[in-house]
Length: 272
Ligand SMILES: O=C(O)CCC(=O)C(=O)O
Ligand SMILES: [Fe+2]
Image (cartoon, rainbow, N blue to C red; front, side, top):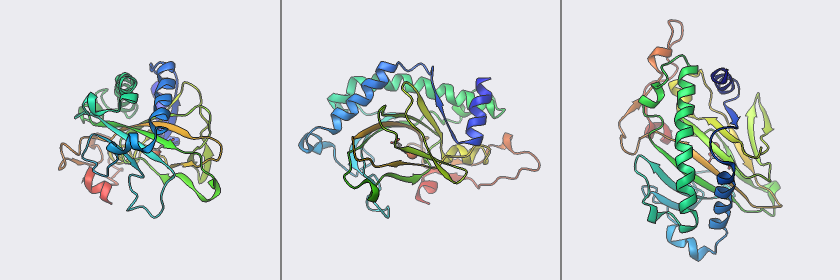
């Protein structure tokens, strides 16, 4: 039953919300609280981490794509690489360290379970996506959207689909700012306390040959309060294996169903 629900949500919406996921609710609340605390420190306390050198495993930056994107987002991000080459504990800001390590243990388990469910839902062996190492490379993006005095002129996160296999998103409890595109309409995804959001990313769309669709989403800026979120990106192992190519999974191609994508490296896809 659960497998059917997961797969039909991924096919029809590109995302779903999950409860009873095994991540303790108080840990989720604590994680968000710590993200607020980290970002709400004075700039001097965060300056040492501020960099656009994304080869580093623990970084703080305003707008990852500031110099490439047509417009800036009203958003700052602390990024921490978790696998396969995790940041050293001492590289993680002390405010976030313990909570983040505990949270990431739970998220790793949940991620593996989700890849198992998706594999089975696609009619593949339970370990198929895990064996493809879809769950092997991942990191946490701790976003912060300060309150914005001109929200009608500003966007928190502009429209995009995630450039990964799967994202597990924890969003702040008190603000509805996330929207997903469904049948050409922007639909609010208001926070549900204790729930996590799972997005299909572009790479899962690619390897499933469009059977699953990545979901376009964005975040509105808001006047009243700052908002935090934590996105866990299962982005593959392109840093460690830059030449590895991904294409539609052969077992999913029926006689009438030709590959919609050619094989590509993740770096090539990201550049495009
Ligand atoms: O802050 C959010 O709710 C969404 C963040 C997001 O879309 C992303 O990190 O890709
Ligand atoms: Fe996203």
